[in-house]
Image (cartoon, rainbow, N blue to C red; front, side, top):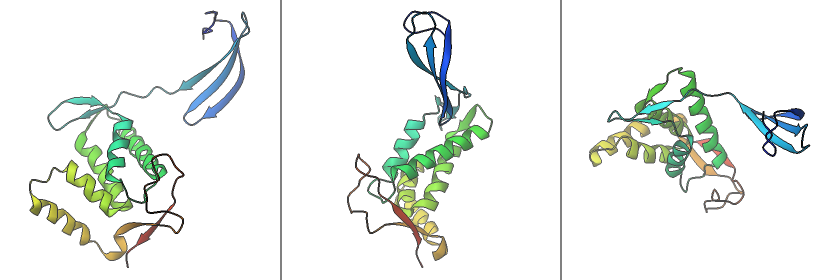
Length: 182
């Protein structure tokens, strides 16, 4: 490891800590005595998403987060829940052990999780993802959703401490209660 200050490769590790899925190391240069931080992380295989038209794009975690975020707009779903969903989907994609994954597979993963989390967010995402040709196709999807037994329909309801406004933009995180319609 070269020192960013003097380019010497003679350094010692002062401190090591795990940070998420990486290892943080504080180092001290033996020549100039400056300290600096390095991070070690497992190099992941480049994952490509194969679009419907055949184009290939690198998997973009931020793009996935933003798409789910839009579907969940003004719903009582915290950014922590969305982040957890994105992490779960990303992990599942990498466990497929494929370098290319059809966008259809990714879309279905998102829809499965949104269907369990919030019916409205699910319908919003499905309306964009499935590109419904007409109102009848959209109505069939909603009917399919409402055909589920009442105890399987998930509705997010704000807790007593959650206000009607969307607090995801920078305020305190709101807590949500998962309840089922009976």
